[in-house]
Length: 527
Image (cartoon, rainbow, N blue to C red; front, side):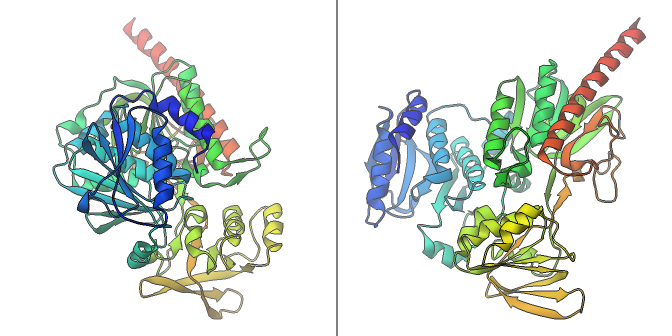
């Protein structure tokens, strides 16, 4: 499972461990136990500070496929139930590094908020090794456990614990339980967990106004292609720049194949996001990940960004690049069954519907891509498109039409998602031409009907159109001086990666020009 090349790469990190870290495996028997033992023993060869042992930890661990991390003999609160390969391998290595003293890339406000929680919290996160969203959730909860001795975090591989998945009726990952109760399900983001946790355990009012940063030249909200482009351009201009990233990479992270990023014939969303992060890392940009902006306040040419952690960032300018999120159907049975058959991420949740019948709602590029992706896993896919014709690119339509297990229905309206015993089992739809209604049996519904702008936090500050998009001029200026906007959150037509990058660059240059003009005005007034 672990290649020599991978071990060599890991050794580059583990050689710098600052304390001893032990993988403590619960005693017992399991068909996969030998594989896990070999996995952990091979990891231990990368550093003299790593060791493996088997010990009965009783109720602290789930069973013979569960292990805990101990740092210098002290329980870290981090547990893994399963073999953390695939996308979760990074989660394990990061947990080891953080347990040994490597600095966490969490902003000070979030660290203080977690450290101040005075309650026993036991997180359990059910994941799939093929889920690319799950590691973000696992990693943030692991860091919470390492920051506060009253918090524990367990990663549980649903593929190795089918009894748990069946008992909890889980059909979407990541699914997070807190103290035995459902905390979050389906397409969960790390920032969602942070916000929800801080709702239950709010930061102290006195701490809420503190910021470790001096006043910034620009704060950029959003870290998709537009936000990262803006940050790079601002940093290259020598501006003091902070990037607030609720979800680094934005919607690009959910895209499988990308073939229209000019000069790159074919790539994936994961590769693009990796490239964005690497490029950003070349510059002096303060990155605040997993933080949500609750409010923007403006007063006499100065602006304050209020984060979900309670921290306030003061800045001379703001660039809003908060992107968009998946649009919901708004039909009965949708919200009630998220994680129980209703999903928004085919890459993450598709494996849970192996050899079952599913539906994809939406005939645009996202919908047809989802259908093609699912066709290799599920028994059959029915695509439901509201308009008389599909809206996807012809090359995608042809690929879908060539698959024997994809059926495409156009000019139909989804009316209801039906569930029985806590699981989706049917969908009711209407033929828009005849008005006739039909019910089709299925196990899952993947909603892919476009995006809505993430502009709620500026709705009372900036001018928006009827769709909630921020109105800007040709230079990305909004209705408030000193606040600029770019990317999918704006009214600029055509939501494309290359366009978002261009708009982000434009917004940064405009912000730079604004700061220069303000400096000249101030100096003239002083004279």
